[in-house]
Length: 533
Image (tube, rainbow, N blue to C red; front, top):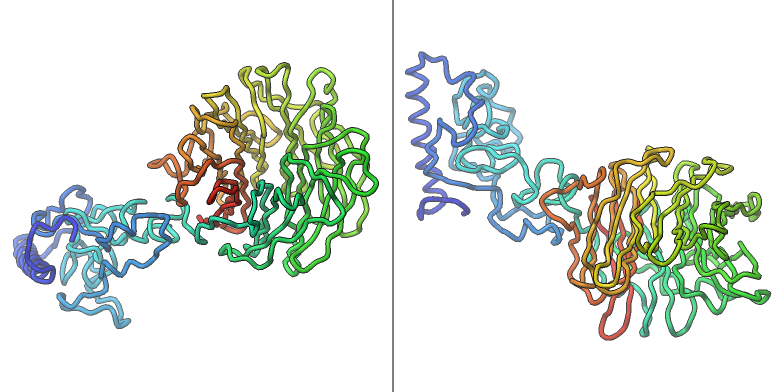
């Protein structure tokens, strides 16, 4: 039992300490003329009413494994806080609270005024003999402790032992080493999540060379085989495709924006492809040549899908009502100064009718920046908004929009040997919220391709690959350089992996799905896990 100063059995120590404690309390109350110890509960540190040397430090469980937020184990039975057989009052049968628990006097089996023992748990700083005397189920040096994220107890606003809320992510599903069902290499594409927790993964096998979709329940159990995204689109582009979930929970219909060719193509065109695990495919052309397109993204808001793409430095946006199967207006250009500042790698995020588009602009390889512009029936800003980053190489921006219209941006950059992942936040209207900050630097290999999602609690979750340490990191922030969890630099519960690249996130109703590409048994596979918070 952690912190116990005696080698005697637990019950003996508790009985002796309780007996000594009660005798001293009765003597003290008599000396005070029956007034009790009203008003003395503000003492912090070792409790002056209890001999601090008897029980030392104790929490509701002594199993250090419960402190691991990755084990998803909510069982705290190793710390038995329900056994009060050593005391005179048994509160485990639903009996009403004893009358002495609200008389503002330290009496009965209380460990502090009107709390502990058979009364309700004591607040942090009050006296205790065992964990059950405390609200947080943690008694240290005979003083009730406040909940922490490493106390091995399910307390505070946690959703499981030491995870959730202001603690690290909880594991909602098992870690899945291979989400795809392909025996050969695959290239990770994207992930999309529905309100009921079901999610779909888009990936590109090397053989056969066709985009495939696979659906899973919220616990990452497959509910379909890998299915072709489209039988009509061939020669797909290896550039990042994109995926978005509709609100159709009966069919779990998704739409993918991919670049490839159909029977009428003369170059790499842009298509939106829709299908569910039991729904036949449909696809419509977003852009048809003559310029080849490799980079595209898609988002869905209601029945309208919005697609962005880049062609010869021009970033275009087009919308399509998939319920009515008709386009909504013509394609519109986001960057009017493309001739001087050509755009690349466009991406978008949507919420409540607002679309924000971001892309990379470069004047030379090592003189790049990120530009953004928002759209709602038309472009809102007169011109793109630049982040005005330090001159460097930047790639692969990703976006998320919070419920209050704050925008988070994550992107990779840096030179070979000093790759980095950076993030920044923008207020509604795309005004800066602080300055960009470094999520991680000093990385090797390819420039990391990270992702970000907005969560229901107002925070943003950022995830990125780390080829140097063979890890995939994830961390939540509520403001610039203001992490939700401050005692760790990484909230990821999953194990190390081999050469991870391209992380993608999706979130819905308290769940976050993270997927990435990594090596498994000499092939490249899609890996991932569902987390809760």
